[in-house]
Length: 197
Image (cartoon, rainbow, N blue to C red):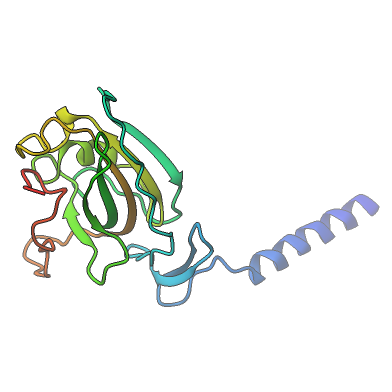
């Protein structure tokens, strides 16, 4: 009798707990996301935009004579939003530095218009094409790119190792063919393949 009563109480407790819970979704299909820095944003789950709160990274300084032969990718902070894959379009903030000389190349950090591009071969430099996929929205990643994966068509940078600190602000969902939309990147930026930096 006691065993049956305990079983009934447990079943009732599970039913009540299941009815009263919340999964952070509103009736409109949006979700609440908490970023790595504690910022909470409620947006459509497929279109999360992270507002960058990270301080601007310090220049890594010159590394004269340093030789980097392979891509080095390090997640400083992992994001909590959607993952970007090769071929996806994303919105980024970044700083780019010549690893050997320490000279800044370009930056799109805390600007009113972040860098937007598709992460695709022959659209961005190969170091981005290989080093960005797998990032989550809200993440901060450092990428050290050897000359063979960097600005191979830029005479001033073709032999330079390049350092990037990158924040992924948003993964832009793919529009079905014929659906319209802006779809355009924000002009010619450093990480575009063949840029003159």
